[in-house]
Length: 239
Image (cartoon, rainbow, N blue to C red; front, side):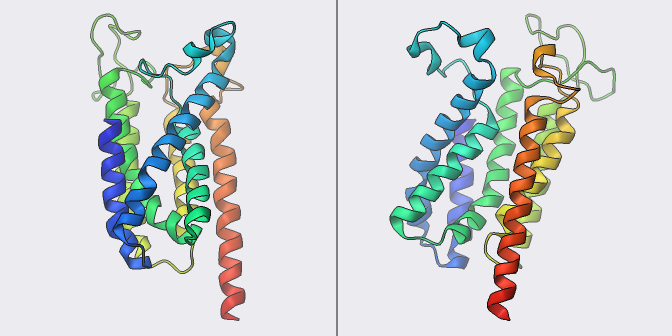
């Protein structure tokens, strides 16, 4: 599913980028950079979060073994963002135009990514008896209880976010607007769904907040600052 997520994201971004003058091959060339940055960032944040209970005293080779999972989306987003910044500097491309072209596709890729989480049985929800509760098979941590389908919640919310951002992209007022809105909207939707998560233990809840809740605050703030700075810059240019 991760491969499908990257392919869907890159292809749609390559088509969208034509509107801002990016040849499709420029976006496709960025693909390997994003993949490496996302995997490194996602693994580093996972290891940092679960160091004490999972990695303290482990050999260095174990820390970088990802074939059995152990990736955190926010780390991937941060790592891919740094990779995009480096790529834009080396290739002398306008960063915020590039970020805007990618932003809707990030949401689309996430749709497929969370479906993969559902199939793997990770990132599951807390127990519930609602009509749409899902039941994982015997051997899963939640068996035999029904749980919130948090992976489906996030997939649907990000599908809506993708459609909204793709629509807004054709009407944007300044460079960086779409990426800034993505950061803010994703932080809000992620925080809502986190309230239904059931896969965190007490050690990773702080006042009822999960690690993703805490990172979401920073991501939302980053989006708000970017929006304010870029919109003001556009206003000054017009003035």
